[in-house]
Image 1 (tube, rainbow, N blue to C red):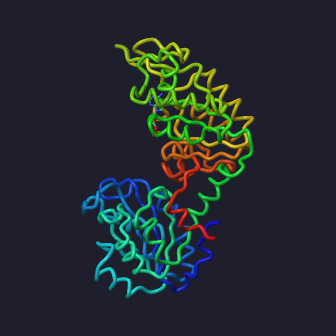
Image 2 (tube, rainbow, N blue to C red):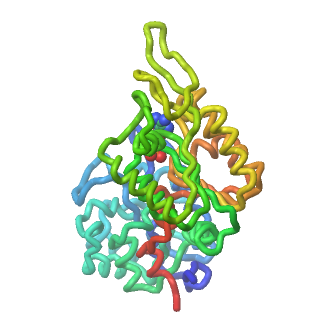
Length: 393
Ligand code: AMP
């Protein structure tokens, strides 16, 4: 069981909140404020309890040095607009100026510390640094699910030194994702797509033996198809991963976990007159052509399997969904999930965002997970240290 926000005495207290405000910036403004909005329930809870809120987050990859473009000022500004109250942005995470500002806080005040990855001690999970962060507050709340697979000072180390609990966003993610890791209703399907085969083979390996079947699409399908001896034309293949792909197929056979690869694919090639489109058998893609989406037969088969599933997890699009009409396979399978009523988790950042925007945001049976790597590691049964340290008993 996780220790949760409601179990923590936050009234009139200084509360250090680890948030995930790793948002895209453009021209000094927040280009997408989804992650800020997702943190609002926890912040509103704390405000209702007259807490003094000290926010800490990373942004980008400054690698332990100060990078001016990665300062959190634009984030503070947008957050202040969303909350309709001032958010004081500091230029450091530690030091006399920070202590002074915190000592002057009144209940309901909000401070945002500087990008915590400006300090090399953060990613090193340095104990002295974590202790210093802990000295800023009376208790600690972790609401940064997106970085919950990284044991850093602000996501893990600090929880050793303060009464600590999961924020509302983290709690909801753990509750939802646990439905797929603890006795999920069967049949249990995993849908895997996307382009990065190295990442996705890891997911596949973790899930073999846990799920009943995999439906594979997207670019990752072609490395697996080629590993089986298929001719995939000029489709995306990562040659370095062929051996690992073969091992993965073998492991699935041993565990009797079905792996369903595309039967047909929508293919394209560039010609003088623009892009030519066609449909081909996935095992015999002509030279010079690339597979960009699952074909109609595969789409129908995937939709049929989805219709009879009870639990579904999905990572990575089934085609190049940014380029219609190659979004069709992904969209149709998503709609089939919404109709099926099966409990589904859609994770992995971009896919989730695209599907949410395509009208599925209100499907009651679908949980759109806010994490990328964290979601996949959790679903694969891995222990995430920042979450484990919040468990009680
Ligand atoms: P990932 O981050 O690994 O989940 O990959 C997401 C990306 O995979 C998206 O940008 C898609 O356009 C891309 N993708 C999906 N299917 C294909 C494909 N058949 N060939 C090349 N890229 C693809």
